[in-house]
Length: 193
Image: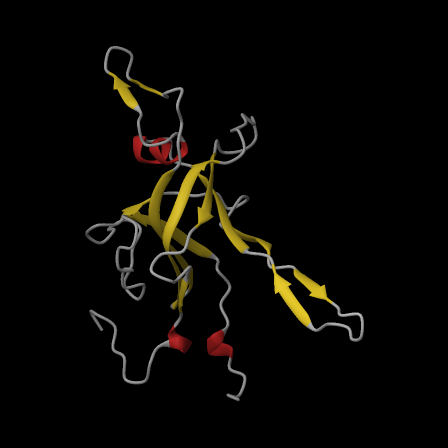
């Protein structure tokens, strides 16, 4: 077992979220910049500090089966479901499309976006970048079904947020992938280094 190391620890003080097409290869988190998203990826822009990225899991509970003679001869687990929430702060078409099904129409006479009545989820890949000084960490989710989470609220003393919620799906037998320098394979040199 490796010895403990402070280089494996990060406080995710700053960060950004990027969206891409489902299954798109993850970007190089070593050089990722929310102001210059790599080709094929879009930045959500500014996101909430108060309602930051939050992962949740549901399921995975064990049911124990006993025989008349013995206890715990079999165990069955319920399916495990992962989800994610984040508060998007920038009120722009790309984020509204994520919240309202990707079918928003622009009404040029009023300069507004029209939300259709048949709202569906939008499937995307997500990459979450967390930064602490020169430390970086990434979480790649190859398939997430995104829609509006809780209804937005208007608070006079807080930034307006679009609460986005996503159901994390499996894509090519993977649900998520973690990136951190402590996990890099020996000899790996990041692009641009």
